[in-house]
Every structure is written in structure tokens, then in C-alpha cells.
Image (cartoon, rainbow, N blue to C red; front, side, top):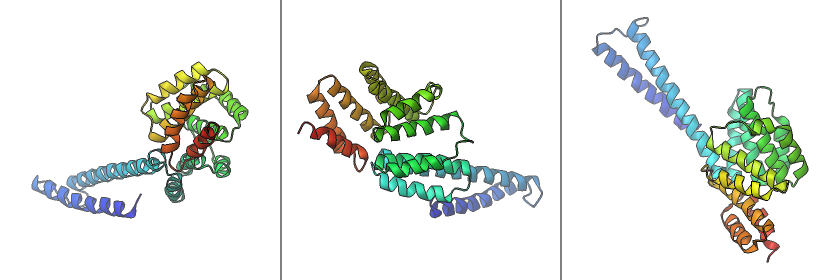
Length: 257
């Protein structure tokens, strides 16, 4: 969170404290130390500061995530997330941020760094959703490296996690895409197509949608619909920004040049 945002929140808190004291005084409630008015005003200010800080953190998290998933800029996402990792003291939150950071290195094409991150993450305090995200990201890393057999083995070892009910739409879409990728690499093209279609209907972010299109192009190729495959992959190439998807799309299209 930016320092100027924190200063604004605390300045606003001071103004609100003065306002609360004036209102309580007007209502005939004392605001001296230990009085009911004193404690009421402090509780009000504490709640307001808590809500403002929570909103600021959520806004910051959304802004950083959008660097990657909307702006297609892994480098900017990595830079911002690394700052957050350095500033966080809580070990669990630090590891969750590292998990987010892994997506930046995967889409940025730095697979070695991504592996180093996964090796450094302590999952002991993770709940089931966090473990699902961990394995989901790790499978995406393996697929990016064409380690298909290892990706399938990781998926099969954790199928219980991938069957969970997921409320977050972005994670739900990502998990459906992973299932679609697993079906594709196992040769079940129809199942893969259905899963990716379903994933596209859960309002995923821009980068996630391009990842879906990438696989839909591969599916079209498997169905011998080459013109459709090329058409879809051109869209991926033209919109993938600085992500590894652009390079992957260019390699696919080079086969038909």
C-alpha cells in the first residue's frame, strides 16, 4: 500500500475523531478520558480506520493483479508483488503472495524462478483453497514447460481438491481451464472443449480468456479445423502483450506460415 494512502487514512481519522467528539459533546455525552463518550468515539474511529485500511488493501491487491491479468505486463506485476512480499511480516500471507508471484514468473516465461518460489513456499498453514491454488499454479508451470506427464500426475494426486466447490469466479474459471487442459492432454477432446467453454462463461480476466482461446485453437487443430485454429491463435498473438502466450502463439502459427 502506498505511503500517501496511509497518510490520507490517518489524516481522515483525526478529522473524524474531532467530529465525533463534537457530536458527542453536543449530545451531552462527556468525551473525557474514561467517559462513555470517550470510548464510543474511539470505537467509531477504530472501526472506520479498519474498514478504510481493508478497502485500501483490497484496492491495492486488485490493482496489482490487473497488471498481469488485464494489462498483460508480467514484469510490472512481479515488481509490485515483490514489494508486497518484502513488506509483509506474517509468514502465511508472505507465502500466499509468493503463490501469486509464481503466476507472474510463469506468464513471464521465467520458469526457473517460478520453481524456486514453489520450493520456498511453506504450505503447512494453508487451507484447502490455498492448496488448490498452489497445485493449480504448479500444474500450469509444468504445462508451460511441456512436462505433461508430471502435470497429469500432480493433478491425479490432488483430484479431491479439484472437485471442491469454489465461490471465487476467477479461481473457478482457472480450475475449469486446468481440468480442460488435463482432458486435452489425455486425448478427451470433446470433454476438454466443454470444460474450456464453461470456463469462458465464468467471466474470467483478460489473460485467462486468452489462455482459454489458446487451448481452443489447439482443439480446433485436433479437429482438423486449421483455418479456425489459425484465426483464434492470431487473436491470442495480437493481444497477449508481454506474456509467454504471445511466444507460444507465434510458435504455433509458424507451423502454418
